[in-house]
Image (cartoon, rainbow, N blue to C red):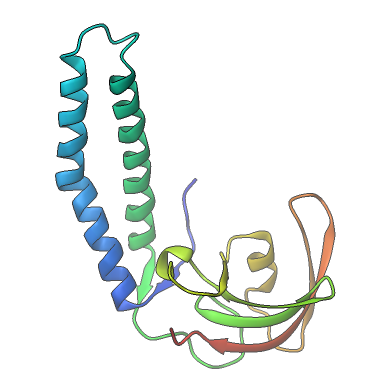
Length: 161
């Protein structure tokens, strides 16, 4: 699954993710290769749990590398979006969703892993329905379970981290 939308990241978040990617593509790959090689030396690969675990770890690491590469390629780094009341990535939205008031950040959890706020991707069903809308608008979207959910948009402001 490739991400085609822009993700807003602070400079700190961008630097942290870039450092993680550099580690995974450098020392991280070396470490996995050494684990696989050591497990191979143990003999029969069919019944070698260490070998299979190392290969699974390698697959997860390579998936993370692809994810980070795509995220950083499409990242907008720097100042938050303008305070124009229009919903886009990097905005904090206060809305009533199916009768329940919620406040969340529209963006990427990768860019804000330590926040005490819910984060919805702009490519999620909710995020897709909200992008480009403004405070006071009412929209509906289809949830993954097929239900149609109404959203009344309240305050919209840039995330200031």
